[in-house]
Length: 214
Image 1 (spheres, helix red, strand yellow):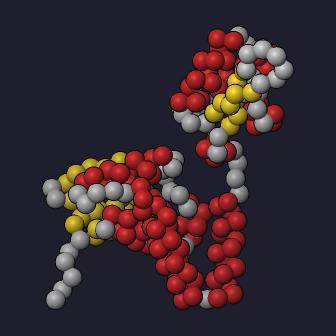
Image 2: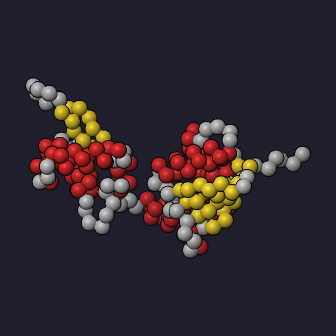
Image 3: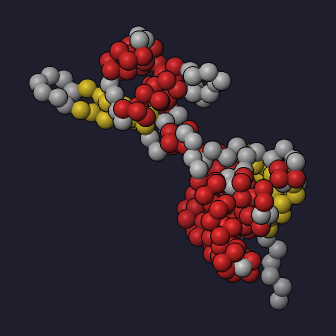
């Protein structure tokens, strides 16, 4: 991705500029950063391809309209957030106020809501396609994911945790994630390895759901 790097890259400089200004034209970016029009357009094209920047047509007075560029919602995730810290504090407050059993029931409701919210992303009945769709959707959400077929099962690996602060201290969060994946895939899912145990990523085994006993 064009914005990665230890020092501020040209693309990241544009992102920071748009974050401060709200929007800017190519000429405005060129003037503020002291770079060429070609360089600005090259970086903007890459950022648009990544879904981090969008453009809108603006008319000012007489003459041809021009484009203003602005950051998308996806770009906001490049900046520091305190959601993980807030979630941890809220979870601990719930535990103190409601107790573990009620909090576990609340997690079940959260799991069901997440599965319902994301269910439209998973289509079809073939398990392979459903697992692949889930992996692609997780990737689009910033969770590096891969799928490996193994006989009649599938191994789903996540290489970064969506809830690292919470899961590090409260492993029932991992259980919630496992159950949500099972609901989304309509399959049996087991968590074989967890990054919170020092593994490189979390590994889930996905298999066809066993028919209910008569």
